[in-house]
Amino acid sequence: MAQLQKNSTLYTSMKDTDPLTPEEMKTAADQFFPLLKIVQEGMPADASTEETLKVMEHVATLAHRIRKQKNKDKAKERFGLVPNFKGSFEA
Image (cartoon, rainbow, N blue to C red; front, side, top):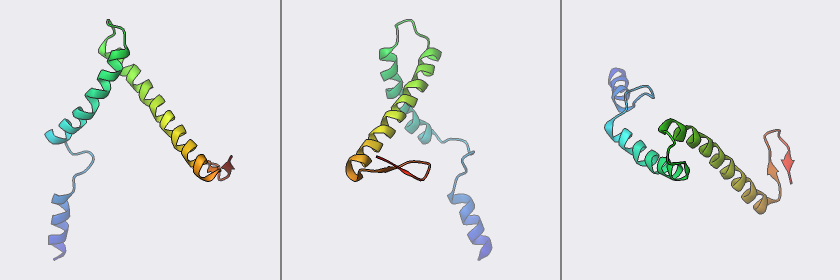
């Protein structure tokens, strides 16, 4: 019984380091390329793909900051105080 249980977990879960499946690559590409196109539209016509990818990293960082601030503002609006990472609250 223990052997069967051990074998069943081996085949049902994939490790993070296992090769990606075509389906996983398709899912990632379907999400990535529309975002790349958004950044490309704002880039100069002669910008290289490498330059566009660098700018995309910066835009993604900014988008995460904006999301974090929106969530913080929503929490402040609902509760008045927002916990910070130091264990205290901000008004």
